[in-house]
Image (cartoon, rainbow, N blue to C red):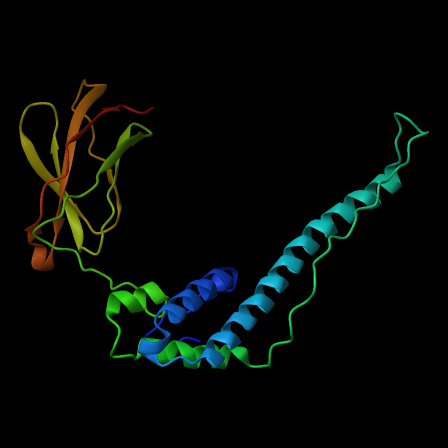
Length: 236
């Protein structure tokens, strides 16, 4: 049920998606040309799918209950032999099973989805609400973005973690505690390790890091991240 222009739910999400879709097309049935027969078919399908989900879920629980009962039979009750070794689980009443659904229902649902997805009477926001198209992916604005920098110390070295968010990479700036900020490297991966050695005779040094995203052709764009200060140390 994937044609590239509408979202196809995973099996575990299908029942919830179907309920939302039915609610939407019922509200806009006249606008998009759905008949009462179409709505009846969808509602009958929902009843069947929901019933199957309920039976499947309870059956999994029952299976575990019967496994526990089997193990109780094998082990018995060593603390009190007079007690029964097992209490049999009882089957729940699932109620009346709904009418059978014609085979190949997925293709029929797909045809309904296409009607909604191709409707010129609905806005994109309405189609997103119906679950027949995905939300548009927004590209990062290179002039209005601030990196979310985190820094930890591993084996004495500063390890920077900065999501790339679609950018080419980021430039690494650092103040080694002398008030002078230097650009020490570029990173094209999310993780960057500052492996610079400590000055001679220094065992611990505070370093303040901040980064800025790199756009095309090594151009720095957006805002600087907040400065993150850590103490690096000589690791033996």
